[in-house]
Length: 293
Image (cartoon, rainbow, N blue to C red):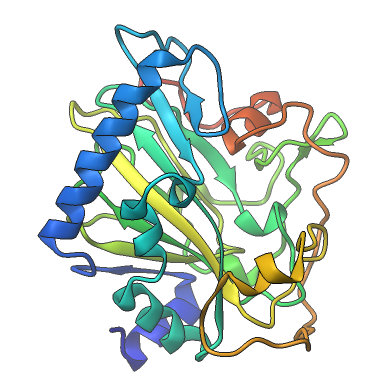
């Protein structure tokens, strides 16, 4: 559970790192199941609805950069969606009414792993208010060498930056054109079982894994129950209400004066954020085969 000091820090900085939310048994189960999915990816040669592959993926040397919507594929992941420690932390930030959105498991193998360019989650899915956050579950220990998430404290209070290039959404900020001092970025470090919570408007990204150790990050998107999407409406009322993980349903969206820049025209490369960001012309992070900065 987080306290008043943590809530104040989140409101000021836009993120938290909370240690010890998952116990060793829960972490161990996630590791075993994730290893099983990596083995299953040997059988595919292109992106699927389950697997997002790194360049150079082969059956003999599987390189998996993301498991897409892992909560759909195994109970080990879906049960974490309603983990009491996570829900308690979100209730402390937003109150009792909370809705789940989606999940992904970003994987960075040792001495590999695609970077994620600087971006704001809000650019992908603006809502009627900005009580939205991603909860990241550390399946491995995160240190400075294995590609931890980097955040710009306080950037959630600033503008929504342009995530376009050549007239299309690309899911990334061109740092050469943005008024952003990324030299002040802070790494989110912790032991396996820790979680991060970061605001949907917080600028963040991550570099390649420069270590020999894996860095696996299970990410769950959540929102206050009265935050309604502006561009991606629910498919059905039943599917929408099933996403409520705490509190009560509402038919009254909360409208606040939040800045919005729509992710249109859509990205030229569809799929995961890695695909969207392929069109970015001026990249900040060096790729796996490049010399570290």
